[in-house]
Image (tube, rainbow, N blue to C red; front, top):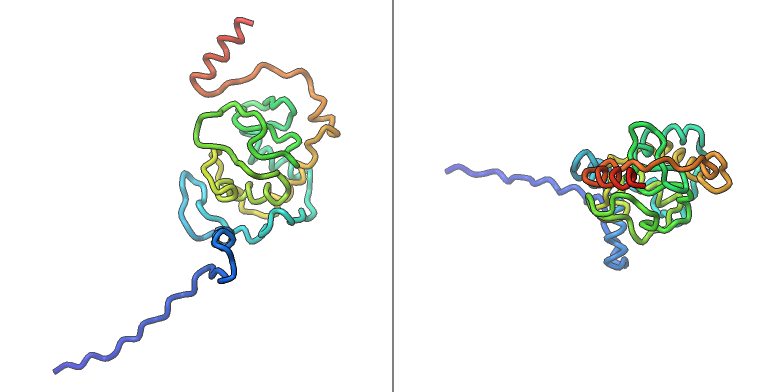
Length: 209
């Protein structure tokens, strides 16, 4: 009669996050959400579902480190200017860009979801319940949907690189009424409405004026 040898079973690896028993459920949930590894989860339409927010663990107290404003301006054009204006009236002046999101002029200290946008009913909602400071902007640039815990209308992969986000954040700090380059611009050009049927309707009424 054959005798089976005992089989050793390897211990399961520890979880990525083990909540402290003293934490409230909401605190533990928030801490777990922020501690998830950037390699965990899956991608949806090119955007990560989960990112590691350990580089900005507390947006409320985060202090923006040194950065390069000029580099941030170039990076803004690469990552953000496709859909966001830097002017008070939300004008778009660059060829190939569309006025999809709110202007990022004077974004520091502004409540999320407050600025006017053109696309009010497409592709999800807007960020709510935040005041845009350096910490919230840093996490939002990394993973918008996770940062606000909701489905927002941005087709944006997110920016993993810490210094890239820091430099863009420094550039955003310059978009104020004290910056004549953006605050004292020329008269606003005719609006461009890129999405059908808004483009047809907009050009029709523009022609009647």
